[in-house]
Length: 180
Image 1 (cartoon, rainbow, N blue to C red):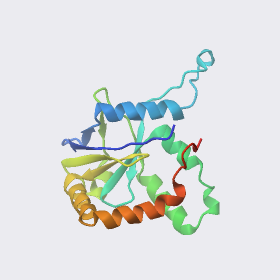
Image 2 (cartoon, rainbow, N blue to C red):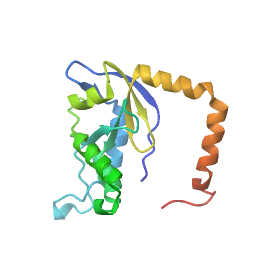
Image 3 (cartoon, helix red, strand yellow):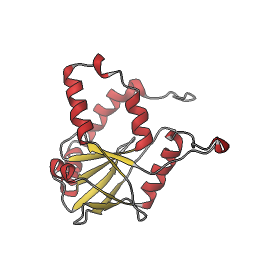
Image 4 (cartoon, helix red, strand yellow):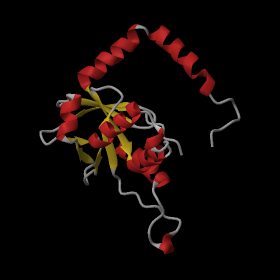
């Protein structure tokens, strides 16, 4: 299963840096976790997978956002990368930076997760945020930053749409084909 997370949810970060993940998002993440979790350790339950519900939160591809990945999928994607010694110094340094800031977070019984202080400071997130589906992960944006981003894309909608279609054309599936 390839994830396909979409939509936007306006949320609030409480004074303890907790954010409540909506139940629909938790259900999507659980479904993905079941796909990418290792088999249950009990040999009698070979067809069952365990999914602890953990997530990874890390800097996104913009300074002002945080990325949230389901833990099993995140590990699966990252383990597919070449060994670090085969990478450039730039990529190795970025990997160190990113790994040092990545935190494993566990939702509580109410679906709340705590965002680490250092990530809150780096991204400059405050109380009002938007949780945005970003296809294979979710992102946490400052609500004001997200609205500014939306406005910038809407301002040049036709041009942005056409440019995106051209760049993605080589990757589009033809009718009757699949990536599996």
